[in-house]
Image 1 (cartoon, helix red, strand yellow):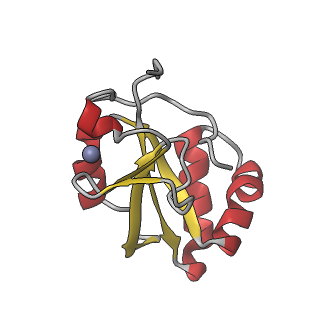
Image 2 (cartoon, protein in one colour):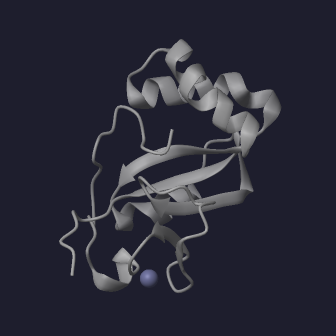
Length: 128
Ligand SMILES: [Zn+2]
């Protein structure tokens, strides 16, 4: 059995095309990066899969609040939750109980190997 760091979580969704600049400003402020860097990191992802990880590094218990308070540049019906460094489109692990994508192994929420509250501050979320 592997010893993994406790998982933290990210929220993904599609940005309305006409609201990309609002998204860029928001993510730059959230991560403490320039808008140009935000564009470089997230621009391609937004164009390719349409999905961007706009929240990252959060404890599991923070997720319901985040899902109820989505930024208005995100299409609510496209929302997915994953372990922060896992692409939710990767087709590996998905827990139907917790509706979370987790990559390999077992669901970290089911196994309790999670950060419960707070946020691990990431300069740039993994997966980009
Ligand atoms: Zn689970």
